[in-house]
Image (cartoon, rainbow, N blue to C red; front, side, top):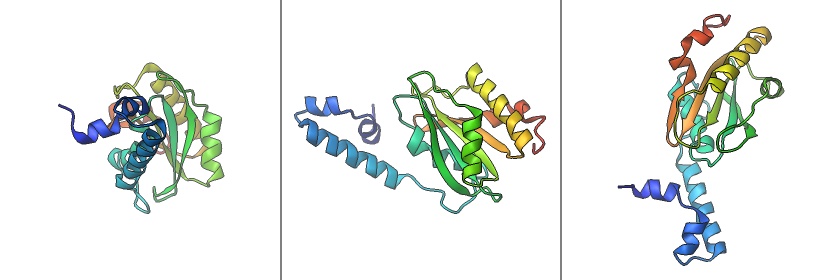
Length: 178
């Protein structure tokens, strides 16, 4: 049985119009729900993102319940405090391309010292695909060269998450900052 929160999270405009609301009323209700989600979600302002859970909290409102894959970078200072959160790409239901130069350009633009990458899996499965592992390897190699540590790569699906660093720590074995 779906909870009220789960049903509210999954509401779509079409469903609301089928319940008798006009398109305008449905759009206003969905916007109000989205605003409520953003206000309800705890923000890590000023606190260090030292573990996957705190990083997931910072990402969940952007990536948790999307219909398409999205890629977001958390740019952090030397104390692992959030400087900015930037959407780097929006893709299809099953793929979103991320280009390492764009990732590092964003980090350098905001004068970050390190970063965490996050992306969504709209179907809810939080297992890393081969493509996820490959881009993680590429980003770790580039982060070694640029001395901008990649602390983790999180996959967000619904209200759950997975840390590639926790599940595939061997990828960080040769990182200078491991």
